[in-house]
Length: 163
Image 1 (tube, rainbow, N blue to C red):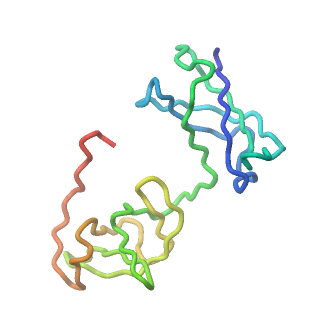
Image 2 (tube, rainbow, N blue to C red):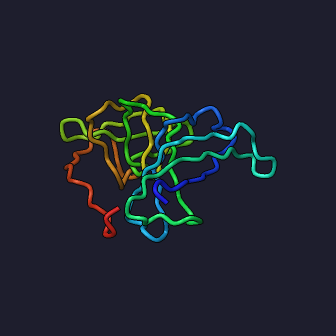
Image 3 (cartoon, rainbow, N blue to C red):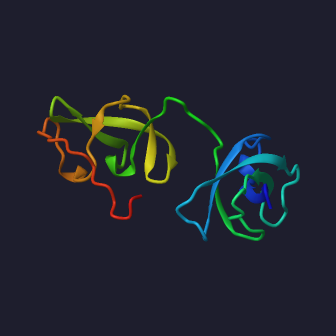
């Protein structure tokens, strides 16, 4: 049981991304607050007919024997890494009919920016153009924003459950 075998299925469209030695992060229901790590050591070359997925297997260190055979895992396998990606909270993006807008804070005033969106992850979105790294953006109340409106930045409140 040490190491423990982790088996995941990934959608066919991501078949080219996994590689041997790649890391996987996962959680199990018994320890939802703990993130476990594994290393890919097998990629099935065959796409499963019924599910259109590819089986990926990995080995996870299990010195404390917390992981048990048959446990259901929720895994994350990175299919791409963008080292200097600019990301903002999803709540900072205002989708309009013709464009996506983010309100940046420049010298204490709101500045409307048309942005091009990239990849999305849980609660965040990548900005390909329109906002630079390090710029502050407005989150919430976007429908009331206007160009040049005074903005008093304050830290974003953390959710009560710590996530």
